[in-house]
Length: 461
Ligand SMILES: Nc1nc2c(ncn2[C@@H]2O[C@H](COP(=O)(O)OP(=O)(O)OP(=O)(O)O)[C@@H](O)[C@H]2O)c(=O)[nH]1
Ligand SMILES: [Mg+2]
Picture (cartoon, rainbow, N blue to C red):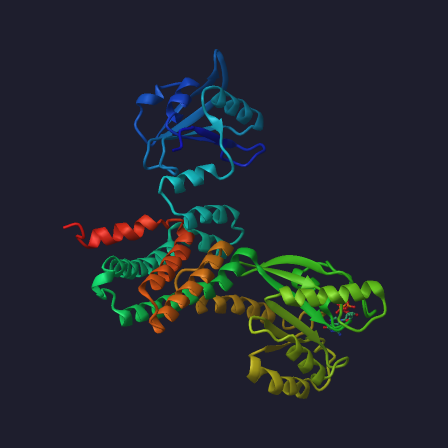
């Protein structure tokens, strides 16, 4: 299917000690040999490296090392060649131009990985994880991507689909023998399987909160009344004077976002305008923006102090913004000057902590008290997400959506069984569920169902 031989610079653009150009396709070794002055590459063993010069006619272009990889044990599962040259963008351009003149063409974005998928070396979820791995900026996202590349999610989905496929095969078989009114597929076993599937899919869906957090970072909105010390806190966390701090209420008007890594996870701290009723047009826009940031946040740092707020105000606010998927850390700020801290905190704790498991931490943003505890609470939040999903972790929006669709279709199968609906409809719902699950790995074909039947039963006897 892929007749072309493709080539591209595999290393980053710009000057480097070494640059690597990669070529893949049936003609890659022959093309490399045509522009190489050294051993005859056509005759060398697979997975070997060779010294020589890239030549354009009589002109030497660079001194290089060429690695030859013969199919199928290569990244693309095709014959491949890698040319390591002295890392100059100019040399890269000359070599690429030379290769295209000798029969290769420039690869499109992601084309090497796409070939690995088309040639069946990796599935779709794994192909996607290659991109994630390259984009990984911290330990947690690297681990999640690597696990996916190794096939963690794919394996889990494959097991789920395998079970479902067996049942679908039996149901399809019933359709073939419709006149004889036989029931090959045990309905109660199907119900059991469906329940099992449901809980596994739910687990995977749940793991997306963690996967998404490590891949895209956690949005942490810093919210509170004017002068609560939000900007002071942002600066203290970042250890730099990022936002303007003053004792004038309404200092921050726009939102200020900064990313910080704590324990291998990216947290996007968003300082916002203090929330209050205001007649100032610009400040009002800022207040509106702050409210939007609450919607987009996974974690809320709600700042208050006992001089400027009552415990009841804090309680009312937190109840107002309640969302089951929003973690609220109540930060009692300015404890260096606060009065009646215990009584204030106790009132809040009694009202909120039992209900929503909010956490209350006493801090002083200005004196940098309690910040370690705050950082621990943030990493604990992520750790907690991790442990709530067992096994494989999904971090890809497409997988999340496919799983949601799968869950819906599996629930429809359940309904169909419960209501003892016709075998035709049941088969239809089952095929739907299979298709949605198959979307993740990109492997779904209807022939698969047929293939499975034939492999298990000798219908044609
Ligand atoms: N004593 C004391 N003062 C603090 C503390 N944190 C902040 N402040 C002071 O509180 C005032 C307001 O601080 P900001 O950080 O500008 O408050 P803000 O919440 O960003 O205010 P707006 O941007 O107006 O909404 C400043 O004078 C800070 O120095 C603290 O922990 N203790
Ligand atoms: Mg501010």
